[in-house]
Image (cartoon, rainbow, N blue to C red; front, top):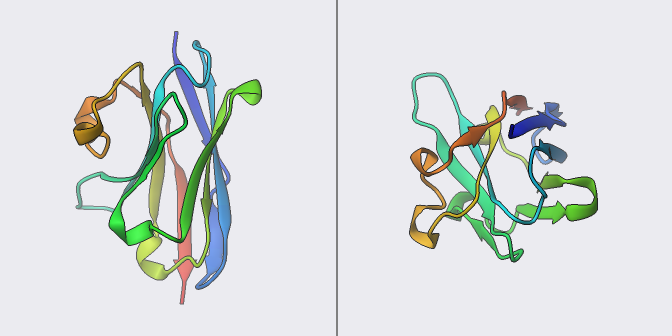
Length: 125
């Protein structure tokens, strides 16, 4: 049974940093593609970053240069390091995973079959 648990959310001021963690169970980290998504009330879930099983990262344009996705296979954990946070980054952040997702669907929530419960990130100005 695949199970994902996010942690690391919280409240920070503009310009601050947070590191989100996604602990995976039920499969060996590094064999699945993992994505980070975020969602605010009334809006669709937005793909933020993804990392494929070979470690190749992908980012949405709005976070390039500020966010870094990485994976630690020994800990079965995928991280999202978020720097230079802005109020518009405020959202519930979710990690998601699937055995394989084509590159052109990495940002699409419908492509992922497994989801965590989310962790809230709040950035104040």
